Image (tube, rainbow, N blue to C red; front, side, top):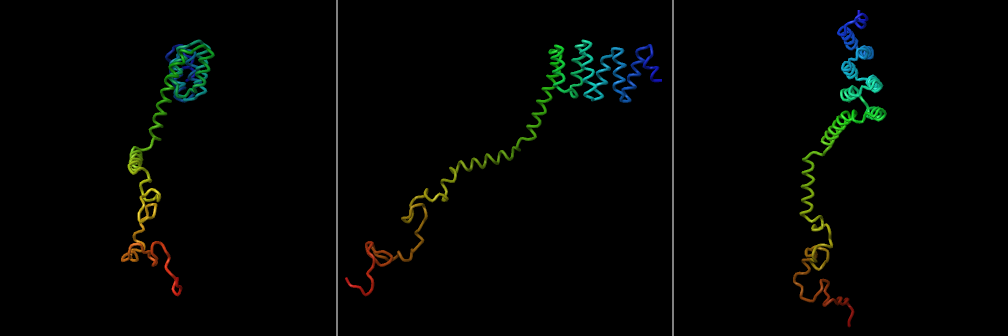
Length: 201
């Protein structure tokens, strides 16, 4: 049976046993068999396939305890999607493996930078809206703002004797026609009010 394969004297049979455990998703049992035979690559591949952060962390600590620096670095690099950066930094700091954690952090930073770039592209405003905003700003600038329009009454030239740009020529036009110079529309002359009927001077 499977137990006989796990304890077989030939290495390849024991590897088959570890592979069967791996296929049945018995990750810890498979890794333990590979550890006994020092099949480090099999340990790393099984841990990565499990996608279990706890199993991967246990394997990393095992490599630190057994001073397998290269295997520690290879495990970090292979399983980097399932390893928390703080765990890698802590183990590297405690064991003096600063150079061995660099491949992991280089890959992690590259992955983070790529994700941020994609996020910026998705959240950026469409180019059409940017073009419309530029067109509106250009039109407003060409008009000099709203200052040149008739909305500002004090900006227009005096028309009809009334400051502020309001044309008063249409008011009382009929009364102004046919009047002699110096006469006011109400019958007075040179600004003098007309005499009241029945009163002599």
